[in-house]
Length: 193
Image (cartoon, rainbow, N blue to C red; front, side, top):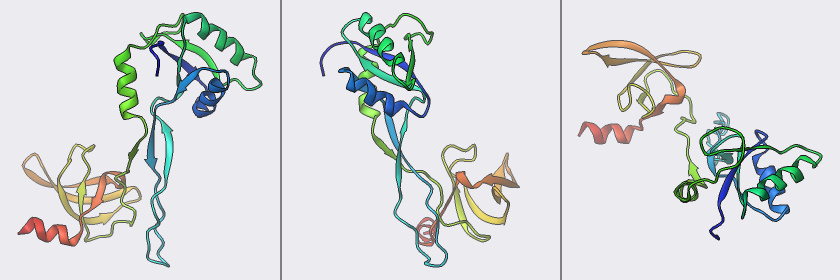
């Protein structure tokens, strides 16, 4: 990678990767920082199996493509070329301060950080097999009751009701399924020992 500055272009949402390839066809270096997110797999009751997880490339910043150019004038020329294409993939340049207008390059440390985190696989913490009454579940780190685990006492459309310690008293709390993860029996035995 050479030392030319990087600029942020506003791309059409959900067409970031097409914009990246169109920019590369015109001779520029372009990057769309992305994560590979795990798709929710369907549990098969007939076969009693869970399929292999599938991943999809998802942009880290929806609606943006990062392009490398020697001068600011090259960005204007690229925007003109892209506006003449049959499908409008790129519409404007984003300045570093978040406003539209004349381009300002990204600081080099931003590109270093983006290159480090781009392409990582993110496994969802969704439980594939549905929770049932009596299962022990742990609450994910994104929730206010993170780390607590309890037994499912009833099911709702979107989650489960559990008995949790809230402000030094036990209360029934409804937690959405996306924050719950089943605790396997062997893990329960290890924790009790």
